[in-house]
Amino acid sequence: MSLSPNPVIAPSHILQLLDRLHAESLEQESQITAGRLRNKVGFDEFMRDKFIALDQDKCQFVYQTCLSIRARNVVEAGTSYGVSTIYLSLALARSSKMYGHQPSKVIATEFEPAKIAQAKKYWNECGEDVERLIDLREGDLLETLKVDLPDKVDLLLLDIWSPLALPTLKIVQPNLRPGSVVITDNITGSADRYKDLIEYLNDPSNGFSNTTVPYSKGLAVSVYLGGRS
Ligand SMILES: C[S@@+](CC[C@H](N)C(=O)[O-])C[C@H]1O[C@@H](n2cnc3c(N)ncnc32)[C@H](O)[C@@H]1O
Image 1: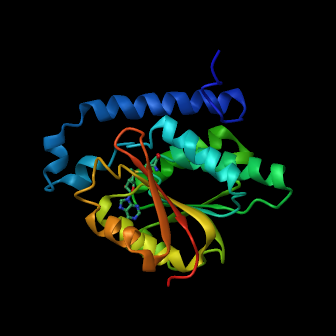
Image 2: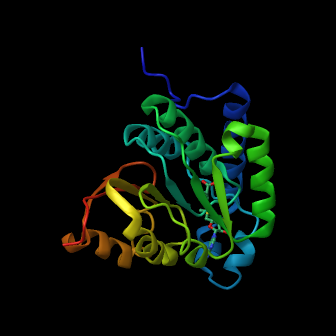
Image 3: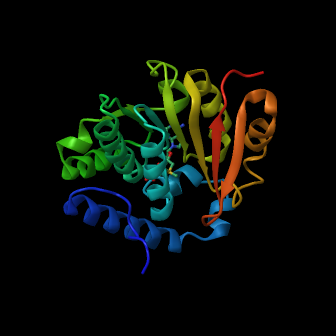
């Protein structure tokens, strides 16, 4: 006897869509060679149509975390085709039912027009309950996140190109509430590229308590303890 493998509570058409999108993303990733990724020339062009969706088990972990921390406001740095966004939206809806608060928004961020158009179609396929909780900021997230952030952000998902992770955290940090969670993908797989972020999170004066959950390539979970000392 084992626990149900999927903690996500959602209508079957959404669960089926998510299974399909994760499978497509993995199929694409299997075609990407490490050499291609290291070759900076043409990186943006090459990644223009790639999902690079957060792995399904990690998405489920993020969903569970949102429920546990009573999430109302979440920021997703890096939306792509909107796969993790769907989990975040489902989690906000469920959290509002559990705790009796009004759900607020998933602030999603993407700058590739073709990905934005397709993400909107997937969210529409999920239905109004998912769509209505997503506030998609179109354009460079280092600009779009500078305005209209909620006072209390409960969770920040850093699923973005590594050089943008620390600048993004620094934009959002003033709005993180004590007890909020910052989740960073590939923290061990890309440790060399996350050097600045890791140094920042490890510095106690910046207010984070960190651990790495041993999913593939590591998922960093950092709890914000409150005011920087
Ligand atoms: C790893 S993918 C996000 C995957 C997504 N979280 C999911 O699970 O489906 C990162 C995305 O960030 C986008 N991106 C990169 N730089 C950006 C920027 N400066 N502003 C907004 N989006 C950016 C890329 O186009 C890419 O689609």
